[in-house]
Image 1 (tube, one colour):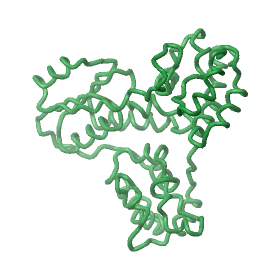
Image 2 (cartoon, helix red, strand yellow):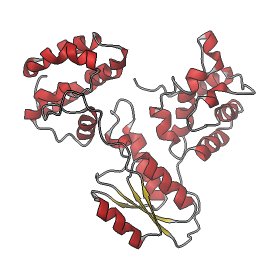
Image 3 (tube, helix red, strand yellow):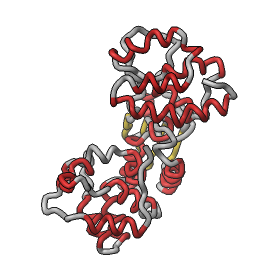
Length: 306
């Protein structure tokens, strides 16, 4: 589901609905402790610059979080106005603020020390930015050809605007963070980094998928693999596509329902697959949306019909 981003008038109307609670429950629901009441108050006062400062002082990657964070479970889910079924759309307000922010590195006083970071995902980039603010020279190593990690390779395009990733690259460049991409480091390579840097930060993320619990099979493409390959201009070959519908790590009960279906996977079609998904459970909603929006593009690119 795409996130809503307000225009200026919509943002102001939404901000004015906020009660500015003395003990804001929305902030208690935020995993990174955003000062939600304060940045909404700044918006109500028509002070966008202050709202930007409040948001980015707490999160360097707020322009990404505002698009991919499950606000419905966190801040919005904890808003006191839920009792009227009219919670404040905090995510849309944050997206409005961050989408208009000119991202720029502050003046940095170099301290002469060097840090290596393994992993150019959100953890690695955020660590690099914080270290640069303190004057460290930072070099990030990553196995992929683009920075971002899960932001670039693990999230479908309909959930994160690619313009946000271009902003991320521009921000990293502005902080003068050194990048060594397409560089896969083994354990011994990481240990050697300690010889040339004062500190080494390991931020490799979670790249392994959950197993289906039915034994390994080369005939099944896991969700993380499919997303990574598709976002990497898809390295899948046409012969691989007959297995593409098996990318989901199904709950065991759902697998029992679908295993016979997979015996004839080469004959399956998108409509039948979607119908099968609908019979499973609510957890498959995201997967259904993924299949509806992503598969048509893959079909078009490869000239096949799934």
